[in-house]
Length: 132
Image 1 (cartoon, rainbow, N blue to C red):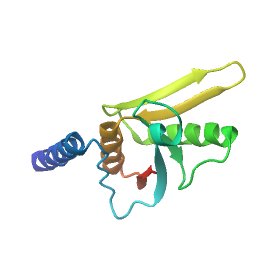
Image 2 (cartoon, rainbow, N blue to C red):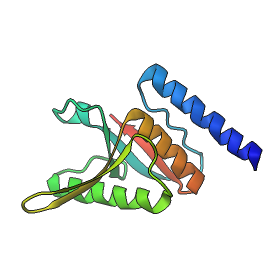
Image 3 (cartoon, rainbow, N blue to C red):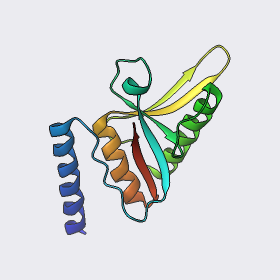
């Protein structure tokens, strides 16, 4: 068991070092993963300066605001189901507007990377892919 914990620590350290060096996510996805979740780079897709990724369920971008709201909510629910605790750099956002509620997962590059490791450890078969 100690060797397994040490291996996880080594993998996590590798991911942390790589993200620190490149400022890009380092997503180690197992070959058995088959359910896609997109990590959408907010600053590239929207006119925002925050360097965070928003998770959407599936392998393509939603077409309209209603689809975005649904896709981000399902991604949040899916990720939460597999996690015991929220990895560093991952944020569960809940915003109430005048007519709707927006729920989503936001993550830094490191957070996205650590989230994939946590999903792997949980046996989720979820595969985070960065878009674009």
